[in-house]
Length: 442
Image 1 (cartoon, helix red, strand yellow):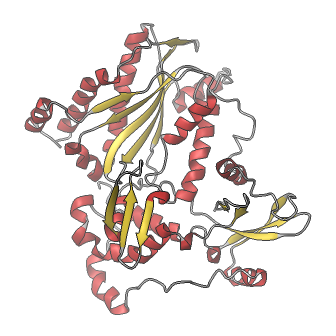
Image 2 (image 1 turned 90 degrees about the vertical axis):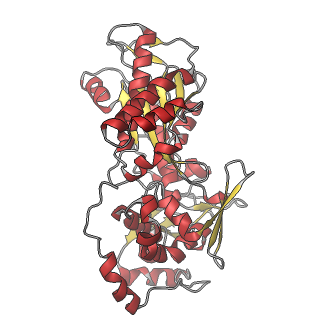
Image 3 (image 1 turned 180 degrees about the horizontal axis):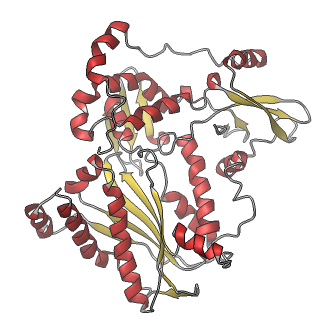
């Protein structure tokens, strides 16, 4: 397990161990998830499909994330001997926002220092209409086809525009399934080189007057043809969509992003793999079991029943080993591996690799510092250097150390959520015993 992030104090600008169990988001999940599991088949299965096994696994790992009772590391100052405890994290993407924040920073650094070249780029967004989004919800393998088709459209455009033989376009594609108000909205964010690379690595820029909507007809045709081949839609639906004034398919293209602005490129790279929601926009009313979620602009709100809120956010949890980020063309893993094997120079990336980026997985403190602009390994008392002196995982020792340090981790300021009684578990067992099944088609 990796170390968990700390929460920064806005007043003192120093890190303090976060206590996720007191956040509204954590309380909402802890109070309502068991009830959500009990009624899922009757209330949500028709809308979201079978409850995927990965959902329960991610939820329970999240509930253990950042809790000292589940193990921690001891961090101690070399000079004044000041000490604090740092809880382990779950490393879950998208659902645990603390862990995903580190993942976002990590990806931005990796993309700009190892993948993206110092050439013009464009940011594309490919989206599909509401009438066909349900297909992608019930069969998540279609998301792979969605990314493949969008890449075919861009690759065809850039090869024809550049007009050079053996030109290879390049892109990073991120698959997202969420909208502003947590609805299921499968779409793609693609950071694409605005041109193509020749066999020798020379970059040929495309024309600067690209019109994103001009790519929409080809994208629409390929998506509808793919759904028809799979037997998910017929000629009647295709004709209906084609006759709409606005088909619902959309291709957005940003202005050209010129090389030299590494910070902007890194910010875009972070943006395309952002989390599906924000806790800052969430308000949980435990007494009424309701969640109020604000829009991105703050001008609109949407009210959820707590169980409906959980059903909505869990629909965005990726399956195990599901790739949500794809490297395509000249940026693909195969192409980069071949160039590395041939000894080609890869130094012309957006930002210079300073040596610490490759060790980002090991240096969690550096990622935390980059997020909150405060070094978590700087002693708050003497400003000296702190270091990790031990990892504590033995349950017999876990409780003794917080007690010795005066940390009342096991005290609760509120009663625990209602739990299932033994009789309820027995009555409900026969209709919910499907944990060994594999519902990969949903």
